[in-house]
Amino acid sequence: MGKFPQWVILGLTLTFLIGPFLIIILAGASGGNMLAFPPEGLSLKWYAKVFTVESFRASFALSMGIAILSTLCALGLGVPAAYALNRYRLPGSETIRTLVAAPLIVPGIIVGLALLRYMVVPLSVTVTLALFLAHTALVLPYAVRVVSSSLNNLRSDMEEAAVLLGCTRFQAFTKVVLPNIRGGVLAAFILGFVTSFNQVPVSLFLSGPGVRTMPIDMLAYMEITYDPSVAALSALLALLSVVIVFVAERLLGFSRYV
Image (cartoon, rainbow, N blue to C red):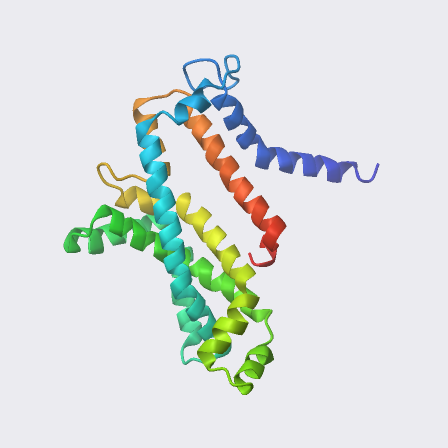
């Protein structure tokens, strides 16, 4: 009897977290022609239609490309930065950490507006390049923080032993450090990829005619069409994110790094 309130609270919490997801799934499976809940019958036609909309295919490809490339670039910058901040006493290291974390602190709308006003317009940067640079900057803090967490769990004397045995610092990094933090690097990639793919505020300012990421294309689609296909697409994207995180947790212990 004493556990009854805890079960009630747990049930309400799960309903609050999972309820909207279930509503979207059912709304996307509606047999009617308008987005509504409860659905007007059940049908998978809107899930099938998602794959026939040209703009969805183009925006999905763009989002995938930008998410993968920006995350790889962020890791290319973030892994050495995390290593330097973790292994060396750099002057102003705390200031550097704060600056690296700035994209997490500053609202995305402000970041998007600043990039549009001071980079895209005056420098005539293409929309695709602007999106790539912006997403790289947004993902970089995750790369630094997750890799730093992984480095904190790696004993530094392993690297020193490799140096004493004849390795250069670079060889010790590539042969000892990287293999031992690969779980953290992969976790940072997955977190960065999901963050970039689902990014809305910054992409909203930097998207242009014919160049829109998936979330922005979904917003534009809803301005002219109110059928359940957007709900179906939302459910598929949410399911994709859940599967990625679930697999990462099973294979890498994702929760240890974030």
